[in-house]
Image (cartoon, rainbow, N blue to C red):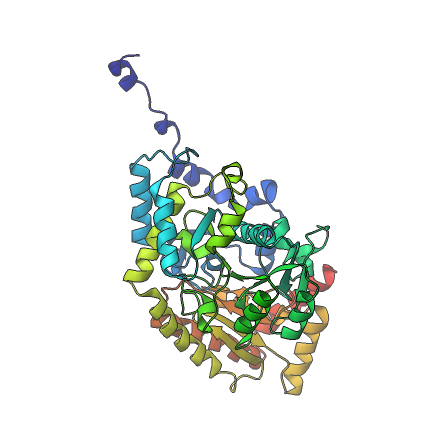
Amino acid sequence: MTTAESASEPSQAGKFDLAALLAERGAERYELHDRYLNPQLPRMLHTIGFDKVYERAEGAHFWDAEGNDHLDMLAGFGVMGLGRHHPVVRKALHDVLDLSLADLTRFDCQPLPGLLAERLLVHSPHLDRVFFGNSGTEAVEGALKFARYATGRPRVLYCDHAFHGLTTGALSVNGESGFRDGFAPLLPDTAVPLGDLDALERELRKGDVAALIVEPIQGKGVHEAPPGYLRAAQDLLHRHKALLIADEVQTGLGRTGDFYAYQHEEGVEPDLVCVAKALSGGYVPVGATLGKDWIFRKVFSSMDRVLVHSASFGANAQAMAAGLAVLSVMEDEQIVAHVRGVGDLLRTRLAALTDRYELLADVRGRGLMIGIEFGRPRSLKLRSRWAMLQAARKGLFAQMVVVPLLQRHRILTQVSGDHLEVIKLIPPLIVDEGDVDRFVGAFTAVMDDAHEGGLIWDFGRTLVKQAVANR
């Protein structure tokens, strides 16, 4: 075909119009999920009134079909660390596509993975090497495999109530039975209470432990490891020739006011560290397992073992470009220092409300990872209503708070876990004092309503009926 003939033909790109497709079929979003994906998701969203239609987003905010602004205090479960559509990350992705790189040939060494590993290790000076996968659970899977191979031992310890992912290996170190039930047999792993050094040592004495994997701050319930625990656990593990794995998938990259959450405790140097979520810039899935040189050299011990652990889309150019852009923004905009300041402000203002509201039991966390816990009130009238909810299903009061925050105040939050009376705040790391004012004002209004016996309790009765019907 001549150049003139090819020019007269419609281009392949012209046959697909994404904007037109969304304009034509976008209104079917909930029906499409119900028909082809997880049918319980649209059912749940319809039930609690979260079945919104969001049309665009920027930074820490998104807008619904009516043009109403919503404040995001969830950040896509932590993925949107820099908010949505950060211009630097967006430009990096346009640039990498325009370069038409020879990506994923599998038999060369592209520069972007090495450059991103180099930048990550600047923030992890005691670590030496990085393996790139595609998600947080993949980063955990890699760490589990590396620890077992490097030590020659089968068992990995984890903490009660931990969440490390939902693939089979990561599920083996997941501390919640609701996720594990029905998927046995899993790997030979054992739970120990977070902060219990005696329990840890008892397991280590058995001589078959490869590692302890731990979230420095657990996502479920927002429980922080007690002061000194990580360092003492590290010493115990090394004395018994086992490894410390820090799961920083949610807590890493500035979330807690340090680059990693384990850095809040002096002398803690995990043997393996898992990161993901915010490294993606909210665009391209990426996970990373960072580790010490001797561990990597043991796993990849010869040319015969060069692909003994690999990922088909691992280290792809788009993910690497997004990660490099994220780290650049974090440094240029001093994100970690910003998180420390605005996180302290938000937590302090919320903690001051515990004396005002008897239903508010505790406010805890670090940086912009904050848990708001509710508890049994003192007054008889509120106590009877609380008891009604608890008898139906623990966690309903927290859901009663989350729903009006969205429906009345257009603020998206989440209950921290099943059967927990805890709301977890993990907003984009770029939220500002105006966003703090907006959240605290809305939360105060909802809590005033709850203590005055307002409309929130009508919704509570609806949740009770649904909880009883689902038993």
